[in-house]
Length: 204
Image (cartoon, rainbow, N blue to C red):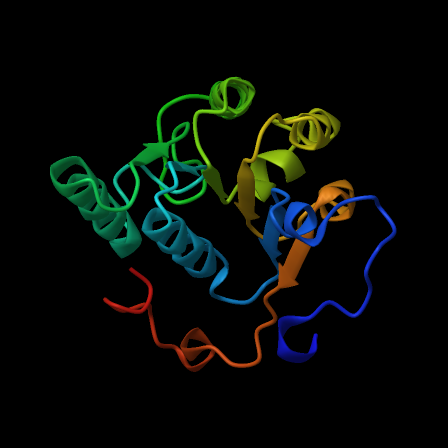
């Protein structure tokens, strides 16, 4: 894409402006680090445009507070106090299945995940946000807790101009096919390979 120009201009009857402003489904997948970080960066860009940003974290424990959450919550305060940027909501969906042991069976966690997705679907129907970040959402899809075909259909038929970013490893091929932008993070080297644990400011 030289100088930001597309290599192909489709014969779809749309103007350049209409085509440029179509809402996107974006997927960050792969085994490498940086999937969520990149998604939250889009969240900050969206806030700067005045977008209504909704973050929905699947999998990570409710006790696990990433640095981007603090930043985006502060940006929400800035919006409420000054009118700059846009409103931000941050929700931890379910019970934090993979990061900490919680009471309840797998069926309980699956039900939590299904209800989390149902709430997002309701919000999409009501056009509550301009940008949705579904962090680690590929996992409940992979585990069969949320129906992939239902998710794809809902995303394809969502009204208005709502962008959706989904992160997590092992994205389902059906989700990848439905997405407009897919990035696969590939690990080349990682400090953990040399026995180094995560550290402040890098992992959280």
